[in-house]
Image (cartoon, rainbow, N blue to C red; front, side):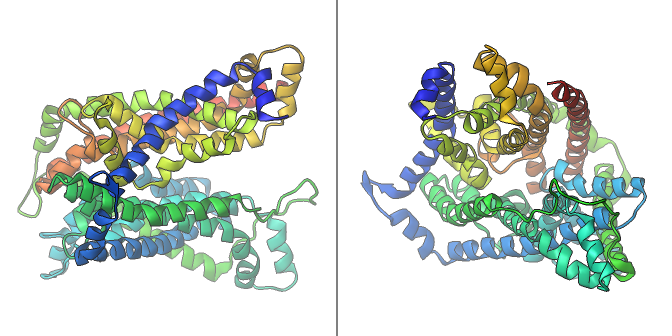
Length: 556
């Protein structure tokens, strides 16, 4: 069926597609074009002058090189740690509570502000740091590459853990069992069977972590310092310190090129045919035999060390929140929390309001884009899916600068309003919901919807009564991701906060830059608790929906 005939047979599709394109055009395409125009148009003509200013500055060239080097090393270390933790929960026979504990600690950095580990590293290894005092080390400098690398690796390795765990859990243990039965050692079976089958997930993880590090703005701002400049912080300082939008746009474009390259590589890799190990024809399933005693000892030693370090860092955050002046006066106090609930109440309320508004809007947008791009035929179908994921591919700093350029002057003025912050969150972090619903739709036989249509139901009725109930678990999972990032993200929205609308993450960063470590820790503790509570509520909704709608799907 052609696109035009499909749209004639389904009149309701036209207003939906038009509405989606208007939304994507306004909040993704328009800011992106304005960013390019600001970068390449000088005095009304096409010019490379702005870019030449960037690349002629040795400090900015160093920042670009540093950004790419940091992203490469974080991707390597984060993927290694994620793979080790994935082996622990999928290939080692551990009690269920221990597996849950390992997974819970691993996920902790994901539901925390992006610079929580930066604060803890400063308290432990910075000036007057607790570790330096304990070991009597006088001249250690955590600022620069090493501190930034450690912090980002700990922050982003859970992404690799989730990516690799899902693949390891799906590998048929019969394949590994066959290798063992043929006389192969556990290490040889791991090297020749398990590792090759996991390579797609490992490669995808490397690309994801590279993009995450490249987009990180908060961690380098706290830990990198002047000795290790990176492009996101340079762009931020160019705009907020020198009020130079054109210079910030040019720096953002320099960051844009490797980010888009990684995005294209990631989509190419994900779209490739994966290594299938589970099919409709299979024998009796065996149990996972593990990775041998030596492998188990190494994996568990690494996991124990990293978990202990993560728990230590978060314990420092809690201790710092109750300490009067870290390193100078360590007496117990409630002053930091009193400050948070006195001066930070507006930021807490604003953050919750924005997250609670962004989440349902993002859910509606995700299910609409996923459904029309996967189940309907219309012109530029694939382009809509690509555009809907574009903002996620761009570093947050680039998105924030693009929004400032686009919505700071006529014809559309949104700066200083809640709308611009909600739009930045929805159109940047909704990609997880879109991909989740698309994956769910791929598992639903289209014949179910065709049967409904053949019985006289409308397209809207079929979507509401057949498709939507089956994709609700995936939809809620995407909404959960959007809510968490609406509470904790800062890269894009640091440019968009105003007197009218404040964010907890912006207040934490403000406290850090003013060396108010106790207040920063107290804000972090409150934010983590809020995210944990609301994340738990959304998790219960996801599980309830998964249980209820699996039953309904079975009856359909």
